[in-house]
Image 1 (cartoon, rainbow, N blue to C red):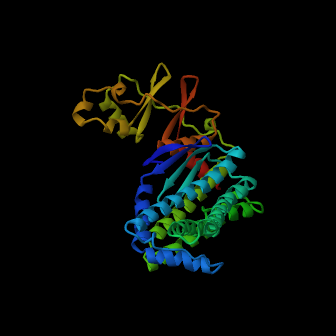
Image 2: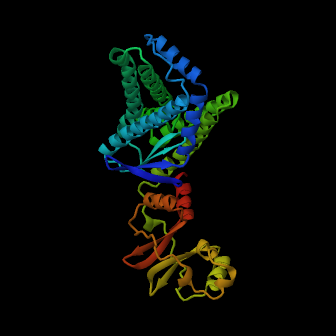
Image 3: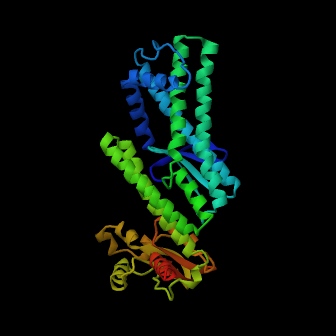
Length: 381
């Protein structure tokens, strides 16, 4: 994910942090620190509903301690989010799904997994394990709250421990409940899709779950506007966009499941030589309305030149340049037997619109987004 950097690995899975993560931590710390009295009342009132836990608050409210505790609670919450995503990832990996990374960002965590057609028998336990893990973390924190007075009495230090773990216990239980809402593509929405997919085709189950998710997104947006909650508004936006994207992705995966590149690629291919002047390539782009061409020498693919490659050079420099001076030599190519779904994943991951098709080193065709979209339209008839 753009804007992320790796901070380590857990169970062999790369852990990344998005820059937005560093924006939300001080915000949470500030919210807790500036209204520490409300935060204390929040913990006290919640535990009074079960079994009261008296604790001293003198150390919690002293000096900069409210902001320090706010930071600790914020980091603890995201540690819980990380454990939540790890649970998803480990169950998915046990089912043979490749895990690319886990990224912490402003609204929580995201596990990047190998794309493919979802199997309801795999998705159901994978979706449930995250919220159940959050519930377990919440119960462990609650256990620490009730165990602390027995070991530390009613001291200021004990009060600080009760406050931190009490707050984290509540947040993790809320995280569990919130994630179980059937707001696809959240965990609850994926549980709903997995249950529906046992009774109907996957793409139809996805569409129903996505529609329910969009409904929740609209509801969250209304609540966010009324309550002036920017974070909830961001969550609503991502739920709505995520539901839409997942619907399209599943539709493509189902419709293109058995389609190979060789059956849809365009040929013959317009190619250019490495020695062709860049000005001539620009003229060819205007004439053919193509935004890129494979570069070949004796039918062997040696590069790709696109309008983006040309635009990197100034107008004055282009007049003296040949294709070899601007082309991309690190070419991603596929074979005629490659599944079209794999090509679509490559295009999305690399943000490219065309992929050359080769047999050995010899160029035999090219497949573009337009080629894939045409097949999808025909398959929908």
